[in-house]
Length: 154
Image 1: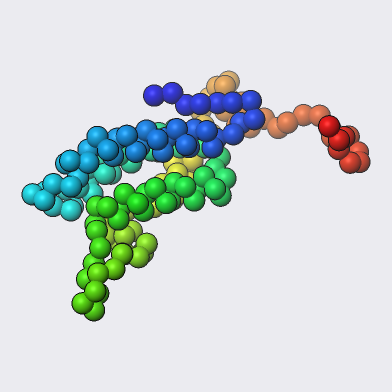
Image 2: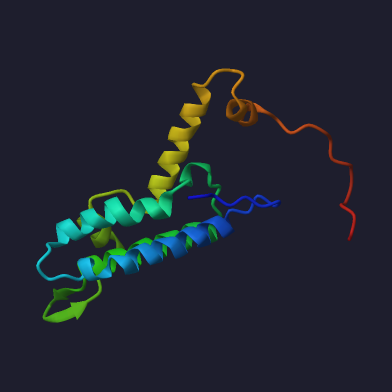
């Protein structure tokens, strides 16, 4: 698997590609995930082991916008709602609330996972040798000075 980098350092392209790949992974396992003879705990475990890593591959290096975070959270909740299904409440069926989904799943949501993996990666880079490329880039500061006044109209 490759990560996508562009000139503007826009990670939305990468996040969208990951969402597409994760949708393909989910659709490939859909027969297994909808099987009646498999418990929900096993199906949730399949999600954690086979589907979630496809989505979070390379998340250590992502700098996400609020829109990207929103799309990732929506996708995760969509899959969890399909796994756990609706619930009977007062004699009527209703969709589970987000907090109920995360409580049933027993794991951190996708955004917490991404933030923790970024912290883990930063710790790894800090512990590297001083001559390592990723450490030099991590500790570098942009040079130069911006011109005074309003930016030029183009």
